[in-house]
Image (cartoon, helix red, strand yellow):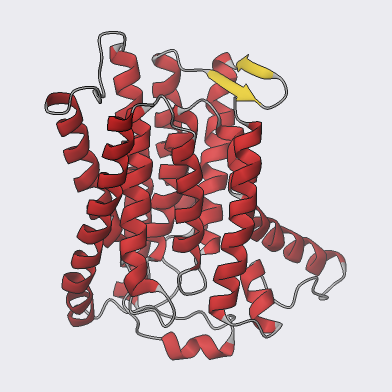
Length: 337
């Protein structure tokens, strides 16, 4: 990685931060006027009721900031910054297609989340799309991305301690499973002010460290990290806006797009250890509840609510979970190719 490319990533992140922060200042009053307030689910912690009416769908803030800075940075790298080209003669059309397919993957999941949030807001209930509708949409988007990767010949997956594996047609079901699982995991992590955003910034910074020879994916990671950091100005406790499913599903899409672009999707396990733990806590809670006919393994799931019920403040949960993510990120660097 050249100094020029590193500088581009830093500037991209900084610009994305300020774009998101300014967009937040402009759009949050608009969301208030439109009465796009969050409906707090009844089964959540009782003290979360005070958050009733806080604007949701705030994910549009960092999505817009990320996409704007990503496109501008890529165009500047390609046509105005020597030594930082996104497309070089050695690149094939397939490689470029995969880069933008990754962006469309994230946008597709963000659109699913937006539709889900919109239904919640319009109907004034915390349900949105049915689980079947949401799953079908996620399978269609992830399937389209996986098929694009296969058609462009990108079916290699790096397996830690083993090496590269040519997955062939098996790439499609494997990719679909990982993408759907990861996006839903990031969605579950969004339940405490600033949690999903902060954890994701840490994860993205470690992904950025893995983009040594992938300028385009580095720009995506840097822009997303910067945009999320700018959004956190308005999302840390006490949150003035929530990202909603719009934002959390988009985050999962970006993480998967970069990980698959680097041919290292299995690194999402250590890198996304918090997302994994949140998902497992829900699965274990439901299974244990059914097996014991009403007993609970955790005080409440997902996992962050368990720690809330144990007396942890929201800020403490964010700090500890982010630190755990950093440890997972270090492990992912050791496991990377």
